[in-house]
Length: 152
View 1 (tube, rainbow, N blue to C red):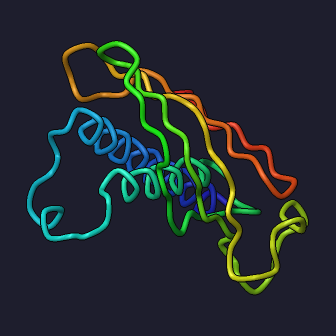
View 2 (spheres, helix red, strand yellow):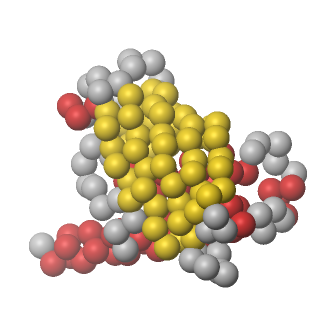
């Protein structure tokens, strides 16, 4: 029993540290300073790529069941409001992590490979540094209404 609980806490710490790393990468992208190395060789929009990974780790959060993952993102609108606030809007391609067994919570999902859902929200960065102070997003569509906000 103690081993199982210890294992669950280790998983939680790993997820949290990965989410914080993705937050930092997103903040750097919004500031325009993380376009280096392999990113220069990738044809994809790096903001789309960073949102994809950021949303995957946020959506999974601390859940042990009914987990989802993001298989892609497309940022359709990006607007700066002041120096540190960025409004973002676009589409996410989400699917249950266990592709063979769709959980009850996601039965409304498209029965094809994955579902396209809209997202809209904002990111507020700390002044003068590449760190996220707060974010708040809504993911909606196909009977799904998920709110992603910073709780750390």
